[in-house]
Image (cartoon, rainbow, N blue to C red; front, side):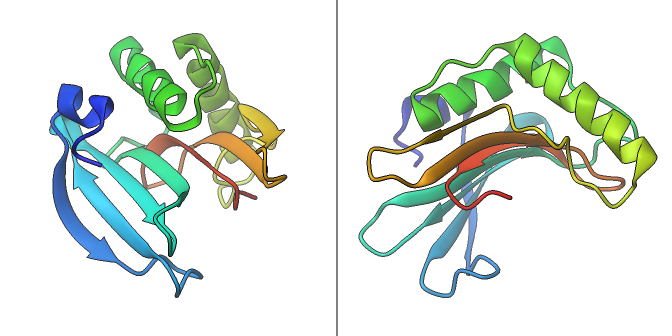
Length: 146
């Protein structure tokens, strides 16, 4: 992962390996980026990546992402999926997630994903954003998303 263009440009540093919850056959990798960002990748046997996350830990309750952070999120999703995302789409998703969370604090993001499609192998793939009460703000993509 550290050899990707995204990580080279953003200073990814491997922080730890772990077993993702519900994925006993795969390995998770957490990379630290500057300014409180964490990139997580879930890698399955055979080397294929099933889910990727770009999360900003330590965000204040009800806070959003700056324009620079929204650009980073959009760039990350584009490189992770090959699809185009804009900083405005990331902002709209985070805003919708914050509004949803005010109605139900247990919800982690808006009902609608940023994008959804099927991979060439027929897997249901989604790009999402999220917010949490005391947790991270961020974007993620994968075929095992709710």
